[in-house]
Image (cartoon, rainbow, N blue to C red; front, side):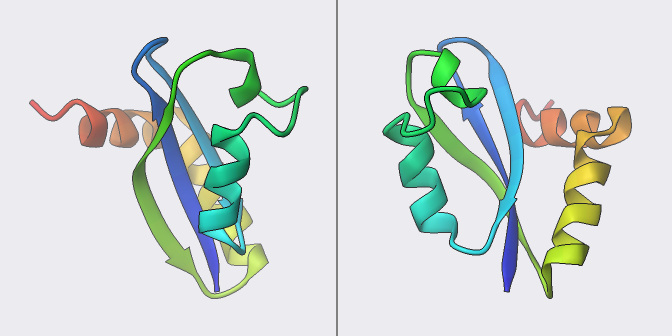
Length: 84
């Protein structure tokens, strides 16, 4: 199984969309800012998991990640984070 996930940083009002095989480990790496050059390491504050979904394989995860990174996908995510 693979996971597509969305992280949110309240301090900077930023979202990050990614995919991984090990969701718990990947979130830990984001929180500890292990990747000095990554998008999430540029911002102080905690990244919270606000959305996740499963995919059967990496190809499906990459396809869904791309959909969520589109304009319509980001609007969908914003509705989850900031429901009306």
